[in-house]
Length: 146
Image: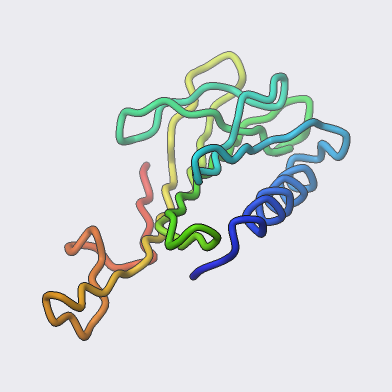
């Protein structure tokens, strides 16, 4: 998937709008940001918290109003990566969602990780089929933890 770089800002705004609706926070400031062609959830306290992914990295996750907005138990994080194709066009590389469970006063544990990686074609090697970064995994794919 490719887009003009200027369209990436609109895309980021669209993600913000969806998250504000899902988090029942219509008047919140930005919940994601785009920097260097990477879109990520950000620290939007009190709507967010720091979490550790099942791969060991640190991220921010946004509260979902489940069971309600006053007692959030579920949290969501997301990221997207894009790369330059040329001076005006960007190309999708990968994205992912993480779902966490944990009350505000306890550690949030990742229970679900969804990932999508864009295929590439290396014509210099004669690739006629798409090549994925994680050759061992299908795309999209997910990981469900207990």
